Image: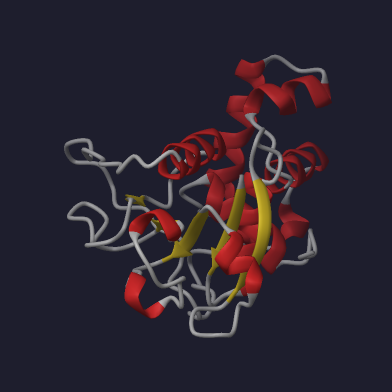
Length: 209
């Protein structure tokens, strides 16, 4: 199914693309910044994935009934718990690639998604669109401080691979990969795989496109 990505930050778009483009049945039809002319690709999309809060009326979606409009999902919306009118689902920035793809498929099928946050869960989000990299957060530790294995794992995360796929790629157990991923996130002061993808693009370890 065709998915259109909307985010002000090109690095965030690259991160979302990396998480989704390896998922079965999902095709990135196009991408752009909110408010910019999107052309026919936006109109052909079955799902519009928006970074941050979304006002469906301001996205330039096709006019007509709901059946003529793509479903809208948001990622990293600071008000995702309450939801927004006209939005099929609001996902946290901690969402894994497989779960994000599942949400896209459900929204395309016409379902509205709700999420019950875990009690006491930390509110981890992709950095706000257009915001400068946080010192003490994203970019606080340089990639040269990573071991060769950690750099390999980060590259594979940025390519959208799951822990099981990384294990196959590196001939490791999935348990060992989980340990590498957690150690990597701790060393870089990152809180999620999405932030790891953004970090990889932000530091030039991977290039958008």
